[in-house]
Image (tube, rainbow, N blue to C red):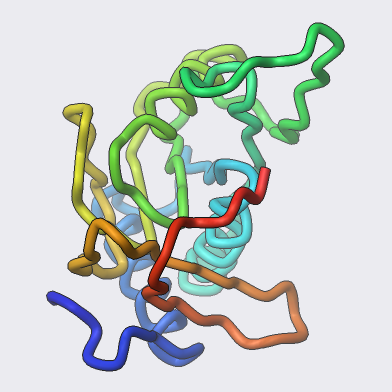
Length: 183
């Protein structure tokens, strides 16, 4: 596992990571029955769509996928009074196994906010966490159940995950400097 030799994964590497994660999720769940995937907006949702699609292809049955807006539940941002939740979860989650997906896990704060937001949509039977990249550095006792890769990243670096929606190239790169704001 460890640090990427050239600081980057290409589309083939990303496809393999997602395929491996899909098989791990299906094996742990003993198939797709009762399984739904929810991606954290904005960067976790494209990963969630790809993961759900991979599981659908493997099982031959649709694995539903939705998106979760955690803006109102973050502990590091103020929320406008007229804030509108942008979550799109067009299926019931109560009693189901939810695979909560983000592109990178570091401190665990995004996942904590996501769990709070998810509970506003129902009460899952079980929640499992999937992250394409685990870069370490937890501040909260939150660990992913399914991980594409574990990478070592310096304090002055961030992991840039780019998952295309058709056109474009999927990449994961370690980049020097502070992560730009994308919200």
